[in-house]
Image (cartoon, rainbow, N blue to C red):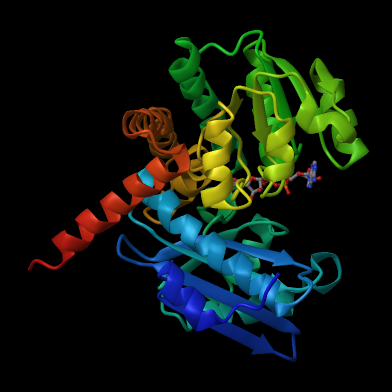
Amino acid sequence: MQNISPLSEMEKYGHEQVVFFNDPQSGLKSIVAIHNTTLGPALGGLRMWNYENEQQALWDVLRLSRGMTYKSSLAGINLGGGKAVIMGDPQKQKTEALLRSLGKFIHSLSGKYITAEDVSMNSSDMEIIRMETPYVTGLPHYMGGSGDPSPVTAYGVYISMKASAKFLWGKESLHGKKILVQGLGHVGTHLVEHLASEGAEIWVYDLFEEKIKSISSKYKVHVAKSDNLYALDIDIYAPCALGATLNSQTLNQLKCAIVCGAANNQLEDEEVHGKLIGDKGILYAPDFVANAGGIINVYYELSGYNKERAMAHAERIYGNILKVLQMARDLNIPTYLAANRLAEERINAIARIKTRL
Ligand code: NAD
C-alpha cells in the first residue's frame, strides 16, 4: 500500500475531521474519523486490530467512516458517518484502562462522534467505555441498550437476498436456492438460521473448524473447501467475513447470480470491481444497503431502545434494495453507484433544509 497523507485523503473523500489519540500509560493508539455530520452525529463502530502500521489503520478508518455516512443516509436515519480504530492486538492489549482512556478521548469530542461495537469489541467493552462517556451505543439490555446488533443485521441481509431474488427471478422465495455463507460469526450464524428455515440449500465456510462443526450440528449444510470456494456452482454468495472478497481474482471464478452479504467494503476497488461484477452478469446488492440492520438497531438506542420500532425500520431495507436495483437498471449504471447516488441525494437535500431558519 502506498503512503497516504491524512489531509489529502480527507480532501479527496470529504472527511470533516480526523483525530489521533495517544496515551502511553494505557498503550492506547487510536484514530477517530468523522466523515460527514450533515444528518446527525457521526456514529460508527470501534475496531481493534493488529494493523501492520499506522498507514493501514488510517486507510481503514477513513474508508469505513465514509461507508457509515452512506449507510445511515440510505437507511433513512439521522446519523452521520464516523469510525474509530485502535491499533493493537485485542487478545493481549484490550484492557479496562485502554478502553476507558479511549472513552475519555471520545468524550472530548462532545458528542460529535458516538461509538459502537465493531470487530473485536462486544457490549461489555461498550459498558466499560460508558464509565467515561455517554457517547457510546451497543450497550447491554440491562443498561437500557440495544445489545448485540447482529440478529438485526442478519435479518436485513436475509430480506435483501429476498428482494434481490424478487428483482432477478420475479419470486422472492429462497427455497431450494444454493447459497454460500462465508464467515460463521455473529451475523453469519443468524443468517444460516433464516436460510435454513426457508429451505435453502446452504454451503458454509469459516477459517475456524469449530465454527463449521457448531453450525453443522444444528443445520443441514454442505461444508465448502477453501480452494474452490469462489468457484462453487451456487445461486447466491453471501460474504459475511471480512471485506474485499470481490476482487479481480474472485470475480474471475464466481459463478453465482447474486452477491448479498453482511461484510463491509466487499468490493476491493469500488469503481473497478463494482463495474466488473455487473459486466459479469452478477447482481450485486450493495453491502451498506443490505447490512444496515445493525446501525438501525443502534440508532433507536439513542432515543430509548424499542425493539419493535427498530425492527419495523429494518423492514425498509427490502424496499431500499429494490429501489437501488431499479435505479441501476434504469440508468444502466453499477448498483454500488446507484446506492451512492441515493445516499448523496438525501444528504444534499437535508443540507439545503438546514440552511433555512
Ligand atoms: P464476527 O467477527 O463475529 O465473524 C466473522 C467470521 O468470519 C468469524 O467466524 C471468522 O472466523 C470468519 N472469517 C474471517 N476471515 C475469514 C475468511 N477469510 N474466510 C472465512 N471466514 C473468515 O463478525 P460479524 O459481527 O459476524 O460480522 C461479519 C461481517 O459483517 C464483518 O465484516 C462486519 O464488519 C460486517 N457487519 C457486521 C454487523 C453486525 O451487526 N455484527 C453490521 C454490519 C456489518
